Length: 326
Length: 270
Figure (tube, chains in turn red, blue):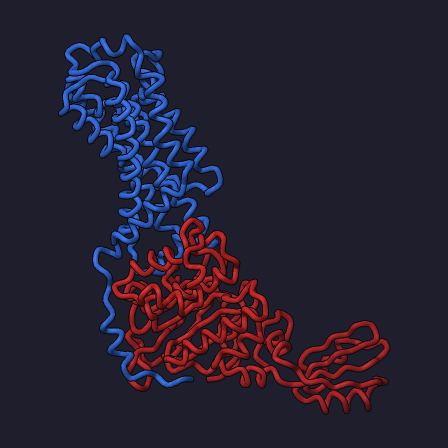
């Protein structure tokens, strides 16, 4: 599962039939094969291949501009890939949508201010061949008591619960969440994810985009890391952390030269801030040994990287990690 | 990874696409209810034409004066038809242009994530526009009945009213086009102004024959001219000039084509 550029293992894309199936015969929830998307000269998505099996909870993680939204728009059929193939549950995105198989919760918007909460659910529900009863959906999302309130008068959290209710109306197989908790407070966020997890236990596939590391770490079975429109890592949170593993050695060293420090065996990246030097490495012992024996470095500190650093290492612009030396 | 329910494959094949592209009367009912909540639009589209009729259509001389040589009614009836058309056009344009607000609120994008087909959505919008247009035509015609000034046969009341109503479809397309083209802020005010200008040019307020020759020639190309001529034809008893039909058809193709073109491009996020 785990790969990074340079050591990228092509995923098993032997089956080029759009109705590609996973091992047990049911179609994959999402299959992207060599998908690219250009806007004029800008490449928003570059050769992304991704297979998501039914029932997985997958986070697409990346900084702003990494191509998360473009990728999601392609899966939702809102935009056509410039090249490559996309299939959702073995169907074209639009076919899957017209059967109520995909739903999406967007970050903002998507609601009419002059309808009430109940009317919004009724309206959306009326568009599917079959949908859950309005009263059940309202109570499931905990918005029965505000059902007669105009959407424009609802708080951000209430609107988000309404969006979630709308997304479940058609009982979709694939639920897509685009930065769903932006602007929520900590408790709102926790409740939201509790609801999603509970829902996913019934076998629904969940794909969410986020730039919150903790969110991807805490709630996804699998993280797909995007950078500049390409997949730079794909694996469990633990695997992602391991990829960017290594420690940071910090020392005080007068007149340090970055160029010299870069030659330390095992040094991944080097930073010099005045008299302080920071060297990231997979082999911190070697770096420490070098600094203590070959230079006048003192006050050594060795710290492990958290997922935050892993994320930065994998998505940042100026790290060796991103070019595949993990 | 949680386990895959064994029933899932069956679930997918059991999923149906809704009939009629998702068109249904619940959605239509809710669209009409939304309209009634938009008081300013309703007042402008229904009250303003009635007030204009009361101000300009009840001149004592109009009641006794034939609308033209060989006409089947009086000038008051002529003015009533013009102002009913004005009201219907305001109604359908405003309703069409409401997509601009829906786009700004991200609603049209959300709808694209449902089975509702763009064509079904447009049909719901057009039917909603026709409901308001119908109210607008009725309001002006009721003002005509109550004031006893317009005079024409029952058949002409019904025939001209129906023509005005159906003819206003052209402006539902116009409203949709501009609703997809323009940003939401001030789109309604802008449309009010454009419609006033088009109404003058089309001869809804002042007969085009009273303008200078150059203005008359230009007016013939404007989108309300042909329609205004056509809806008055039954009353005036004159024949239909083919240029009026061409005018309406050409503008309909332009507006409807423009609306479809913009709609296809409309997946923008908010």
